[in-house]
Amino acid sequence: MKKIVILFSGNGTNLENIIQKLHDKELLVARAITNNPSAKGIERAKKYGVEVEVIDHKKFPTREAFDEALVRSIEEVDPDLVVLAGFMRILTPVFTQAITNAINIHPSLLPLFKGAKAIERSFESPMKVAGVSVHWVSEELDSGEIIDQACFRKDQKSLEEFEAKIHEIEYDLYPKVILRLLSQEAARRS
Image 1: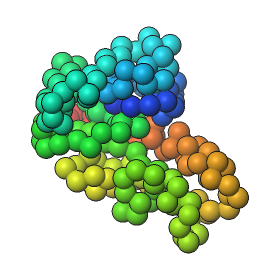
Image 2: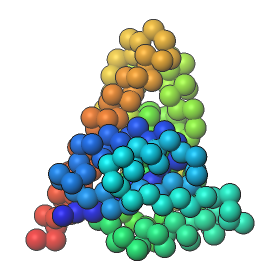
Image 3: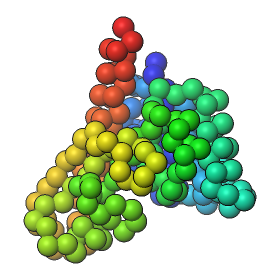
């Protein structure tokens, strides 16, 4: 069975969605790793019996030192894919050069609205459509090759409704992309 590692920092709603839809069915979530000791996602993962490792970034003198610990933890598991799901850390080349099979989901149609507050900036923009992007993790923030995107018309009246629509699309798109990538990797190896 294919193995993934999920990185998260906060509520863990994308983490839980992936676990609910795929864990012990299509793949094994071998480990979830967070940089935030108080992340709500810790309990979400544990509820499904997924091992959680906390690597508190505040205990490291540099971003690179944190990334070294993160890479060691991922390499222990040797996953087929590393999935960032609300992981709120800018990764250094220490990570991006060692972990080349990492993907991220971003709540905008990249290359627009990179970085933080993408949902708010997308909602406030004059664009008539919005959406979600899944991309390979690269050394530049939210700039890796785009794997897939899904969009919708911006008909929502409030930021809350807009954010709910973004999450609805994330919860549908991300598991499908994960399975497709793992399937392509399996086909390449056979």
